[in-house]
Image (cartoon, rainbow, N blue to C red; front, top):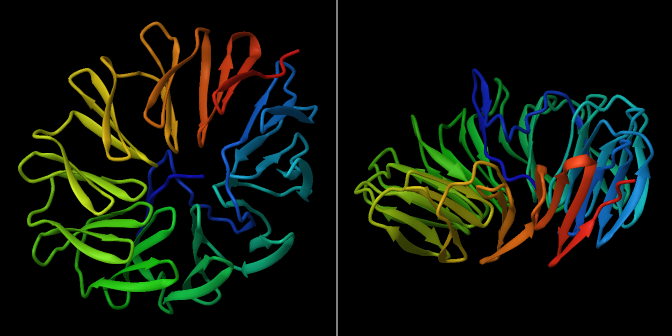
Length: 383
């Protein structure tokens, strides 16, 4: 699962460098119907590659892999010979013998670029979506892509591919951002601001010149340029949040956190506005189900409608996904905050932290690995 928002422009394509999913080559895709939090991966001191699945580590490659991505129910990786393989349901299958340039995996989709074609694998069968696809974005539940042969912006969602915007004179959108299951964009032709959500296309504003907006899961937050109001499109409904534009705003999974025009820090969550404080925090980040808040050396988290104080300092090193953040304290001990509870993990020299959904992989000194999974810490294979 990738928690990413994108920007498409006519003159240039811009994106968060930590989150970019623009691949200028064409790709193949391996989709899944279910998602989980049971998969991880790591290498031992000899470079041998292991996959952790439901509490068990399995050796799948004797030589160091070139790249890998962890999906909801699969691990996609390039082995030492640049062969693309996928691990799912306890088995490894080879997909390509070479030529793969990029790969990634989300909760429901794994993807890679090769041979200038966009393909999706459905029930083990490859289905071509586009023969020329210079730009695409892949999210947890959908793929939005520009089919150059058809001169059309298309979306693949729930096994169906459909056109959502034509572009005979070039790129059909001026700007585009997407969340896990939603797409927001400005049409190059009509200048309308539109949202694609669960198979339906909604026109929110007509003939816009400039608009600021952001997309999360089930939600798009935007400022109406006509009256400067702050609004959300939430689960198919447009809702007015504020009469004036906010100082800042960021979206997550089904919510938007923002600082209003008076400096109040608020969250729109499950259809309601919640005021967190009467002043703006030093910084805040929305990631999946969490709002991470740093203020006056205190670190707190908004989760499922509640604010939890985590630390009296701001961690310098952490990783976050789904409902979980793992971080180092001032003595470099490893702590986890997940689903409203704080838990101590290990007192060891940690070199890297990786959170895959709510599963945690810790790379330790001397090429050791520990995995936290469903309340238990497992030792990875080391020697």
